[in-house]
Length: 96
Image 1 (cartoon, helix red, strand yellow):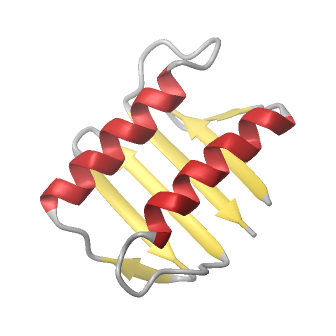
Image 2: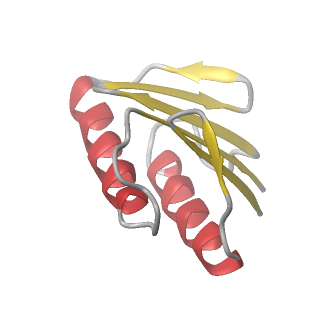
Image 3: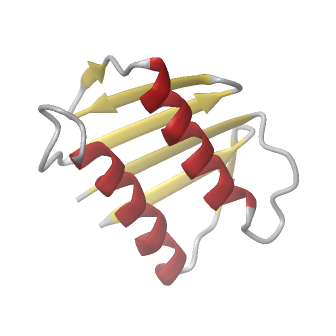
């Protein structure tokens, strides 16, 4: 699995464990959505309250509750990383 993270449009280097942890969380969130299980490529973009999700080059429409859940889960996880102070935007790309 390959995970790329950018916070405020700045790439963040990730150790292997952290990369796998973030990737597994994102995959679990996406796999729980309808028609997205076993996705090969996931792109998640968060800007403020907006959450954009693309799975295997298909934009996925998500309801407000789900978007809020994903936003808070992923932002909370990433905000605990060393050197991350404020998150205005967040991009995560996961390939498996």
